[in-house]
Length: 468
Image (tube, rainbow, N blue to C red):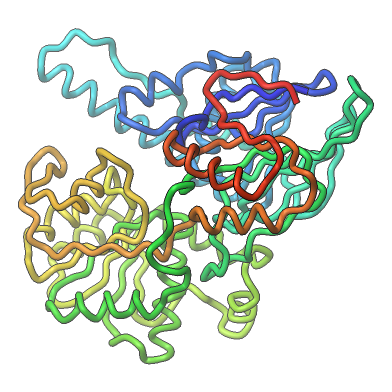
């Protein structure tokens, strides 16, 4: 049995791990590399480490684009077998893959326009796949519930366990009867692990009898400042922002983060913990994702599950408006008085949040509240780092609004939480491979694991083969 690390090795993006066992080639995740636009298009265009047509199955941990985003390109280039995932993951992929196609087209159109304007001679940029390619890819999906074993053939059985990261996120467990040495082995790919005690989701499941572990270490060298479900701190940030008299702009990921915010606001208003002011969700994808959340109670923790049946809608309240149309979005720029505007994207790299920041970041009465991670070089990171003037939609704007950050909403377990997840796990875990982490974080977490675990721990490298 061999594993080929084809992505998210030494980095936190482009998750792809190829498993060869019993004559089968199984791809764990098929994520999109995310970085600078031109670089991303180039890296994601081809599959240099394998032929898509020769893959026997894809198993998808969850719907985030760095784990699922290159699936349409995989099927476009010849993959015709099954893509296995949970029910929630499939439904989210339906909107997220189409959105990824639209973003690629928009990026290419902008690049080509600027290239022509400069009189450049660069080749015309072309998206790696279209919305139609995304729709064709979805026909290959096969949905499985949590903890329902399914034989993939040739002595390989798949079971999904809850990862507590986003709706439908799963740990991938493969029970393997190895034809080469006649031994039974249990391989677990953690996917992305949630913090636990999430506002909406169940805690990550503990998996028993693990022999081989592929484990993410995104925050292997970091401890979150705030505990999960720090509702009181969130409400205090909102009150402080309201005291300034202006609007509160919350850049938010359309999937998971927006729904967390709506649930907390709903509870806060019911408990009179916040004054009742208008709340707007200005993101068509966030609106669609919220509708998907409502039909997947199997992913909710006990509190939200009970709330769903008692109150009918955990994500809706009287003074909330969900906005899809461009005209309604534009009306928000003329809105007077206090309001909370939640809009994608969370890192301020695309989406309608850019228009709200363009119109509001220069007003000292306003507040920009970040509730998620912003990678280096993104507009969100530049604002958080305190730059006094930032580029938005081709022009520069002075940052006069108050800027605040709250990390209690993080969907990734930190170092201590990853270690607790590892300790809850059963089995020998003789071989541990660290993936989905920058080198510094991976090295730090390896040192942490080495103090508590006698098995071999290895930091995966891009284009590396390992024999298990």
